[in-house]
Image 1 (cartoon, helix red, strand yellow):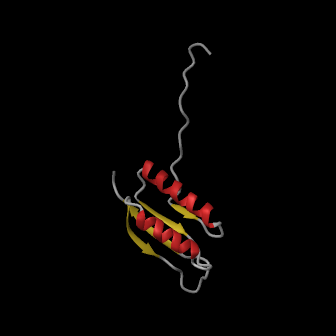
Image 2 (cartoon, rainbow, N blue to C red):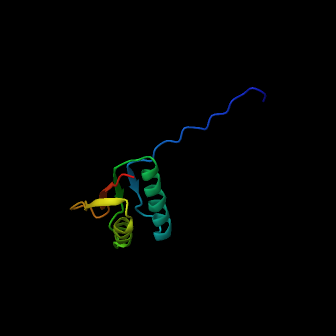
Image 3 (cartoon, rainbow, N blue to C red):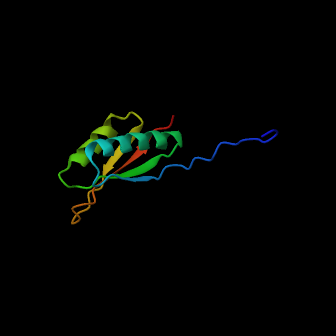
Length: 96
């Protein structure tokens, strides 16, 4: 089209909460890594991952992934007492 301009679509920022409960390990890990990149790209500083508690596999993966990521600081565990399925971790992303 002659004379028409094209503008790139606006990309919405990611949610500050990621729920990976009931996901397979590999799927949850991919979701978490991609989400961390999106948070950094959009300069979102505080976020929470809901990992659940069943077996603790996703909790351990979440903890290790957040601890390894140099952009992440101040990790806080928020396991709900009396609710076996709602474990969570909050953290702060470093500035660029």
